[in-house]
Length: 323
Image (cartoon, helix red, strand yellow):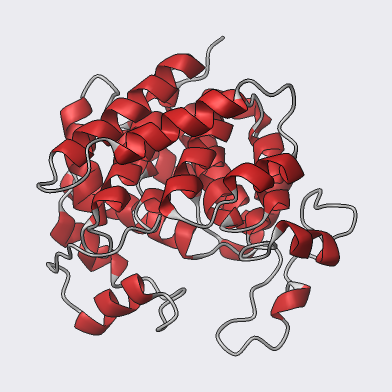
């Protein structure tokens, strides 16, 4: 029996949270750095859940714990809560919920820092092209069917512009939301990648003066190349598409989410690459959770839920009632 919409949504949310927490262990590390810290590669949570990740011991900003989720999951839940309030995606409500978030609010993350310093839920920025919007927009794809492309693109923009208003950031958010939506609809992998490209292109074309379909082309480039490979080995992927800029992070995540058949496996590939590992792992986990719900690692999720207490089951139930 095919999974229900609610089951796909819950697995997508679990994929986000587990990808985020697993990926945090190697975020910002080079591929070589990953191997220095984890010579045999990561196979899940490397250490006792709840203890500080070794390389974050003594970190003055935050001692991230094994199993703890980051701002990626925190802000995904914030967008979901905003949607549940309005039954739609409205940037002021999103902004109000985002202002309640606490993680990664420091000058080192300029997009979030500027927003929280302003303290204005109605704030709109035209700046910042990072993936900070893309990592939180899965609930937009949960609200709208992939047949409602215009609403997905508009909703992705509404969920982005509080902190990320650059053309590439909004296009990345639109592509991510569309991919999650199509996966929930039970679309095939080729259909999902095509829908993601169209959403990105529409978002870019709506932005005056932005390059035509730059982000959509990046998705096509990464996907076309990696689908020709017999195996997606972290070292080989890192050598070509290391996720450290807007045109590699989300295109790589969407590619992993459509080429691979397991949320667990895709999360491990992303984590062992390094770079913006938590973002890539969480977005890939969102897509594959929706595509293949039974491939989310429930042992990982049990750890994440015990430490963070997100109650994603209630969130999925309430979101599915709106779709």
